[in-house]
Length: 231
Image (cartoon, rainbow, N blue to C red; front, side, top):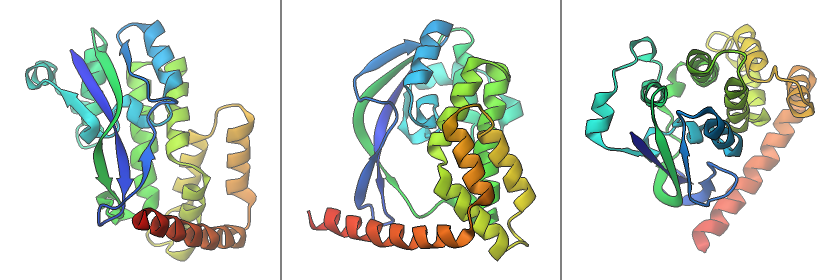
């Protein structure tokens, strides 16, 4: 079985492009057999975001007959990641992945339908969902599971967590701080300076510092978008 992965651009609601979404450190074409552990580890270490491990379904190209040949992974149905688990189930036998390194799609932003139950729940879908997948197919203490957590940390950087922390204060009836703390610990529990700094900044930084950062971020981002539109 073979899966092709392409890149996509990130766009606003009106499909105006503002950047390219990274998948790997470089855009060179790469092919890996994920059924072979040595190749799988190299592949994961070269990944930058969870899209390297199939999180963005629209960026995948697979022959339909090959897709249907693999059984549904019932345990993960409804998790938002059933498509990824189907591919990883195939990789237990044979799954060749080809990253083309070209941008073939534009991803429309500002319309995340999974935010209807709050940002904490949205983080739960990503963190618990992908860690459950890693634990199921690679083992909780495996090097692959550690790489999956790294990819998630690249997807979910500190500003996302600070925003969620602020929301737990603004709308505690919707956002659960205790659950958010659990997710932070699950995602950033690995050793190393970067996870440690992120954990402790999340825990101890005053929310006012985040509000000031957010103000300047929004101003600079709007200026960046305007410059991209004019060009």
